[in-house]
Length: 341
Ligand code: NAD
Ligand code: UFG
Image (cartoon, rainbow, N blue to C red):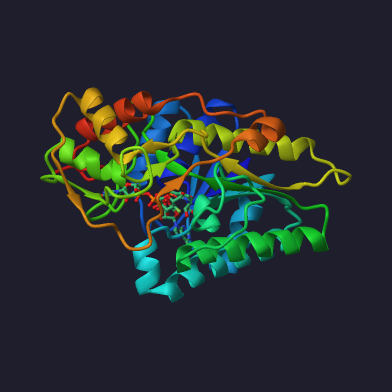
């Protein structure tokens, strides 16, 4: 049994599908602060399997202990957290509380229950502005906002925990830019309000919910002047978590079993590359205008995915065309996300 915190969210729901398909039993622990229970109904529909749901908050240590005991989980995948960079600048305390305190309470509960296998969602945002590309895991960490700093603090907390007790098995996964959706079109990214991120915004332009895209900056030192990122299909990302669980299962106390691993494709695409690929996938015109740079944005960011390949035996298989096609399938079938109206 795997306990999945934040399992109703975007990446969590896709990971639940892959876990169930691979034969794992799954318990989701979520407070639905940024998701809908409908996502879990869809997960069951896709897999034709049942999962167990526990509604609760990770910051509630008692509830976490109860969930770990009731589920009899053998490992935890910890997705629960807040992720909006701008919101973290405006309201840092809720980010430190939800992300750092939430993870602290979770690991206290794991200690109490003698459960010692954890996969944690970190982010490429911990690197900050790259000094050298592609980004390797030993690149210096210099996050530029409270969200990124909350992820760095958690990484440090988990490494300290491992140093104090080598029977812990921990995988810290640094995601690059997750996009796309399950190819059923039943689950996908469902941001609340106006999307901050590129692909969900483009999807809403294509479906007519937004008029046009603002391209934030065309004077970056990149091939076409727009920002370059390492977009990774959410299903590839989900499969990376199953590989991490496998790697931790065979990790021994002799080998370092606190792994820090990039999950990216190694391939960078510009904003305009994404617009063109989305137009092709959706057969819609995506109007855009060039706007000033977004404060805090960097020019380019992409992974060196070698460690993931060597240590996990994982590599991304799906390309930009599939990311856009699956995103469009989800968006056009569910123009208002999980909320039907
Ligand atoms: P999401 O918001 O869709 O999912 C997060 C889930 O956690 C939601 O279901 C939410 O209700 C739940 N949650 C939040 N706080 C909780 C709490 N205190 N207790 C219980 N449940 C709680 O986000 P996502 O895109 O699926 O991201 C999952 C994880 O991956 C997050 O930790 C995020 O920081 C990290 N990450 C995401 C991205 C990205 O671009 N999507 C990139 C890098 C890292
Ligand atoms: N962009 C636009 N217009 C938009 C939205 C984005 O031009 O409306 C551009 C950005 O300037 C950037 C690129 O599209 O060049 C990608 O932007 P996103 O907001 O989609 O992604 P970021 O790389 O800025 O950040 C995301 C998450 C972070 C995470 C980071 C690395 O939001 O939380 O990826 O994983 F840390």
